[in-house]
Image (cartoon, rainbow, N blue to C red):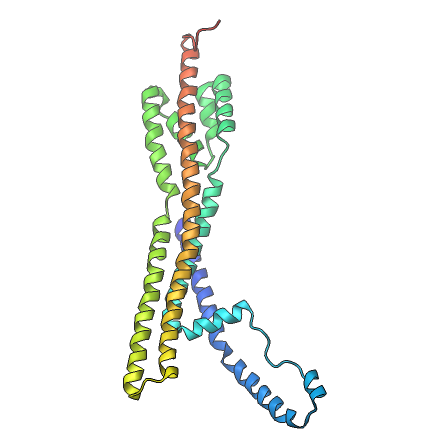
Amino acid sequence: MQAATKLSASFGLVLIILTGFILGAFAQDSVPQSDTTTKEVLVNDTTSLSETDMELLPVSKENPNLHQVIREQFINGDWRFMAPVLLCLLIGMVIAIERIVRLNLAITNVDQTLRQLRQNLNDGGVEKAVHSLRGKRNPIALIFHLSLGKWPEGIDMVEKAVISYGSVEMGKLEKGLVWMSLFISIAPMLGFMGTVIGMINAFDAIEAAGDISPTLVASGIKTALLTTVAGLIVAIILQLFYNYCVAKIDSIVNDMERASLLFIDALVDFKNIGTGEPKQNEG
């Protein structure tokens, strides 16, 4: 239930951001008209001004910021093609951020965990070790806690449990990456689809006009190129986050494997001490 609630909230946030971006993009229609009117008034009024007065006139158009440039290109690329690409970016980013947070929470200090485990085994046996691991949510603690439940069946069963639970935890770490990979693949495809449709519209306009006009052709080609660029940018951004998550998972899996080996060694040492068998030949 909690997972479904979090997923619904994430997709709701994505839809709100997307709707706000599109509405904000179309809200600019009233701004250029006032700017154009102001510019015409300035041009008409400057006919009687001297050169000194012209230098004192304020600049009617400032350099556009990044948000304005993105909004303008979004509109020029046709929102029908750009919106699906933007949706891929937003959903992919939600998944990427959620994965990064989860993976960073899964990191643990292997050496410290093993030292505490050995101390608990020596002080209170398996029961105290199980109790100390209860409630911890990182993968290594979960593997230790669940595997110690097989201790009454023998250390061989514990070792098999470590392998089984390790595979389960590895699958949890990789959860969501397949969706990121999907959006990395589908975003350029959507961009290429916009490119093809834009080129078709350009040729339709040429056919309807009966003449090849540079202005007529440029509109369709510009739409086509903008959708392609948008799809490639989204794929590049998500690919960076995907590679980061994969590298983080590889690091955690390596820690899990090393911790599992040390965990089995700690249990073997505990068993040898408990049965009176020597752990190693001393001097």
